[in-house]
Length: 414
Image 1 (spheres, rainbow, N blue to C red):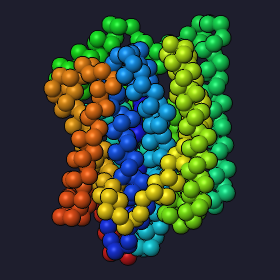
Image 2 (cartoon, rainbow, N blue to C red):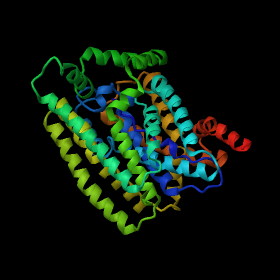
Image 3 (cartoon, helix red, strand yellow):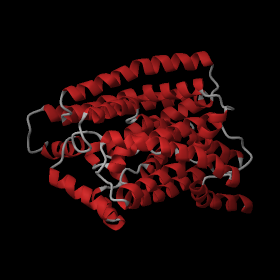
Image 4 (tube, helix red, strand yellow):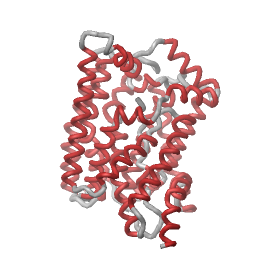
C-alpha cells in the first residue's frame, strides 16, 4: 500500500485571464508542506516502517513520540485533504474550459492521461510512494459526477466511505479469526505491510536503495506494484474525498464564501472530536506493542472513517486563520501554485539524499523530521521567486502544454 500524499495537481487552472482563487492556493500550499512530514519515513526507511515503527527506524522515546504526533496530526490527513482539493480543482478546471469554449470532459481526460504517465515515471524511477497515477485513474472515474448536485455528491461520498469501512472491517475480522489456508495470503500481506517483515527482506530493501539509482529503480519496478493495486486498496477512499471536495467547492466552503463564525464552529467541532479519537487509536496501538492487527485497525479501518472530519476541520482552520492578502499567505499560496513542482522536487531531493548519498535506512525516525524546516524554507523562497519571473511552475508548464494544446487547436479550427 502506498502512503503517498501528493498535491492536488489538477488544481492548477488553465493559463489565462481568469483570476486565481487564493484560498485554494493557500490550503494547497500548506498541504504540500505537510506532505513532506507525512512522507519522510517512506522516503528514508523500508516500506513497512511507514506504518509500524517496529519495522525500522528505532523505537526509543523520541521515535515513538514522533510516530504518535504524525499519526494523530498528519498520517492520511494530507492525502484526504489533497484528494478533496483535487475534486474541487477538477470542477474549477472544467468550468474554465467551458467558459473558454473548450470541451470540459476532453480537457479533463487529457490532463488525467498526462498525469498518469508522469505518475508512472515517478513511481518506478523516483519513489515507490507515488499517488499521481492513482489520482489520474480515480479522477477519470470522478468525471461521471462533474454535474452532480451537492446533496448527491455528499450522499455518494458517504456511501463510498461506508463501503470502504465495511470491507476493511471484514479484513480486520479475518485477522482475529482462526487461521485457515484460504485466509493465509491476506494475513501474510497485512503482516508484510503493517507488521515486521523478515529481517532478511528489510536488509535487502535497504541494500537496494543504498547501492545505486539503477539498482533502486530495479527494486521499485519489481516490488512497487501497479497503480491498479492502489485503486483496489484505497480507491473508494480517494473517490469519496474527491466528491466531498466537489461539494465543498460548489457550496463555497473551500473558496472562503462562508462566514467566519461558520468556519470557527466547524474547526472546533471537527478537530475537537476527531483528533482526540486519533490520539486514542495511537495509544491503543502503542499499548499493544504496535501489533500488526492494531496498526491495521488504526490506519486502515477506523482512521479513514474519521479522516473526512479532520480534513474539513483543517480546511476550516486555514480559512479562518490566514488572510488571502497577507504577506505569508502570499508565499504559502505561491507554494500551492507550484505544488506539482514542489512535490516532484521533494521526491528528487530525497532520492539524492537517501539513495545518492547512501543514507537509506541510516536515520532514526525522529531525526528525519529535522529535514522538514529547511525544505519548507526552500519552498517558501523559490516558489514566489520562480512565479515572479515565469508565471508558472516548471512542471506545471510541462504538464499543461500537452494536455491543453490539442483542444486549443480544435477551438481555432472551429
